[in-house]
Image (cartoon, rainbow, N blue to C red; front, side, top):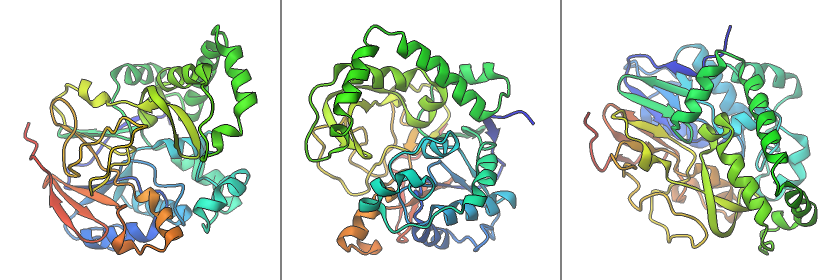
Length: 354
C-alpha cells in the first residue's frame, strides 16, 4: 500500500487534542471531561483527533501510544505525525526520548525521570504502524498539520507519489545533506561543532557566536519538506537561546501570517500558555497573550499546544497537576470551545465563520 501523507477525516463532531508528550494522567483526565469511555468511544459519536507529539518528555509515552493505537484501530481516534514521532521513525534520538532510545537515558535522567520504557520487542511494530500515519488530516471545514501549512512543501510531497514515509524522509535528508555539505561555509560549521559541541548543551553559559551553525540551522529548517511541516520554518534569532536541551541560533517564525486560504487550520508544536507570561528576550514570542485567540492575518489558524510537555518541571518542584500552568487541551469542533484536563472550559475569543 502506498503512503498517503494527506488523509480525510470522517463527517462527525471532533475533539482536537494538543500535544500530549507522554502525559498519560493528563490525557485520561481530559478524556473524562470530554465524556469519552476508556476505549476512546464517545456516546454521541464524537471522534478524537491528535495534532501530533504524543510521545517524549512525559512519564508514560508507551501507554499513550498503545492507548491511541487501540482507539485508532476501532475508528475512534486519528492523528497527524509530529516532529517527535518523526524522530522516532528515523532513529534520531532527541531531548526527552530516553524512554525509547537507551543512548539518551543519561542525558534525559536529570529532567524527565522516572519514565516507562518501550519494550524492545514492540519497537518494530510500533514504527511500522506510525509510518502509516498522515502528515495532514482534512475535510471541507478544517485542516490539521502539526507545525506549518507550507504549499511548497506540500507540492514536493505530492510529487513523491506514495513513496513510503521513511524512504521519503531519508531521501530528502540526503538531498539536504548534499546541498549543505557543498556550501562554502560548511567546513566552518564542522569546526564549530567540533569545538563547541559540549558548550551547546550547557544551559548555564551561552556559547560563543557560531555563524556557520546559524546558517546551517536556517537552511536545514527550510529545505526538507517533511521536517518543515512537522517542525516549522525558522529565521535567525536575535541572540542564542536555550531550548529542548541545547542552545539554538534560529527561532520559529509566524508563517501563519502568510496563510490565506479560507479553511480553518489547527496546529500544535508552539508551546502557548493559557495564563499570560512575560515575553522572553530570546525568542519571537509568537503566541498572543490571550490563550483563546486565533492566529494569522485572517484569524483562522489555532494552536492547541498548551505546554503540558513541560509538566516534568512540576514534578521536579512538587507542583500538583491542579495547580500547574501547563495544560492539555482539546478544541470541540464545531462548537469552538476549549476543554482542559482540569475541567475548565472556554469558548474561543472569536467564532470562526466561513
